Length: 605
Image 1 (cartoon, helix red, strand yellow):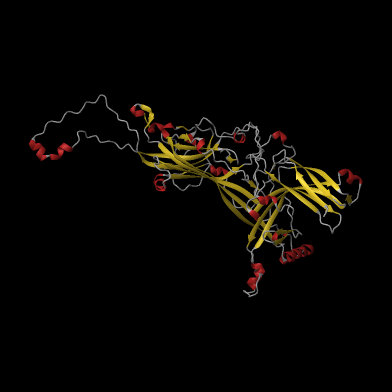
Image 2 (cartoon, rainbow, N blue to C red; image 1 turned 135 degrees about the horizontal axis):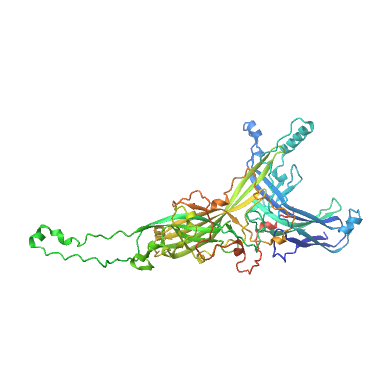
């Protein structure tokens, strides 16, 4: 051909990951080996949110034919696509501004040589959705399925007929004004730019890229195009949709937790004490018995000399397993856990020592339990929508994709905890279902779950026009009331280990990118506080995650529980700043947020 065009983004300053308010710089390179006539060279910054769904296609005609033998191709499922341009900006790099101001020429000839044109874009905070409506000439081709799609799958003969009928009716006034479809009203939302998304095929994807187009002067010549995809991660926003400041001191000391009860029945002390009375006289020696007395009452010799029997010193051990976050709860991929684990009981620790025997520092073993296993799992829920239109009516179809993500499966092998060492929980009377009684807790050492780190590929939680992503987290712990002889023996595990399952719904996963408020432009509007799509299935409210669950094995509906003070542990729960700055001296590099290989293909449409 003699022509080659390329666009390259400068990734040195950001490590390859871009966020809101970043400036994307780069260079367009055009290599010309023979003269070429062009109209202009333009560069576009784009972000495309795309969904695809198979929708059953109902054929009314086939029903009226009363099952004729002729095959009806409309019986097949319809493949619908929904595409939203959440980010769009453009600039002309050739001809330059000074030439366009003094010349009205529409065609320019470039002689052989290498041409370089710099470009620069600013990434905003909010999306700017641009949605094409009606019949368009957009034709997409899927190289894997070898099929075409026109107008996002909404193109057929009925579409043309309905649009023509609607146009005639509106022009002649045959019908009054039509009310907008309920499903179509407010279909687009204004919110923060969503993150890059890939890895679930054509079901849902969000791609960001810079595209250059060299528009040829002749209609018979194909335009030259090139793209360079880049990865986008949005800034972390707080519950008020304000940008989190990595240097900001957060004064909210509330905590949110999920707790579930368990009871070990008939615990017997492993260390017994005996109280010896000091002032009570010894019983007198029995009188000698004669021959006839022994003969008439032979069982008398077997009777004990004391009528006092040994009291039953067993007791039930009620306790709860708890995961605790600072409010609002959050997780950050590649960072250490932002939560802590606790064991909580309403029984006073003095019941678990030998204080009444004069040895208060000695445990009687009634409060000893053993933690055998800890399993942490994350569930990713991706909800999508596609818009079906026949030229008159419009219907929104929804679907979801769930993925289980193992985080940790730790075998602890008789990790011992003794409630005789429990400390009083602050403000416990306001955070428990035990009534006015005090609560006592033991913090599980972080070394038992420090490997609970989310993978780098995880997208942060987000909601945009046609895609939303949220997460649920489950924490399962196995406990036994006695030491396991062989933790690898399945029969012993089944007989001795009881499991507690904590369900943390609608967990907020953050990007892990913050910035100082002083860098925010004053004229940049913030997104609405709670953007949502109408008619979408309701997602669990985040406040419901703070709950207590009854002692039954099946968790009940959670209810919010908050603590105004930190726990009895010396170290408070980690804040956003604490998690972000772990081992970074206050300056954390951006995570790479690696994408699936599909992210880098089919961006030149």
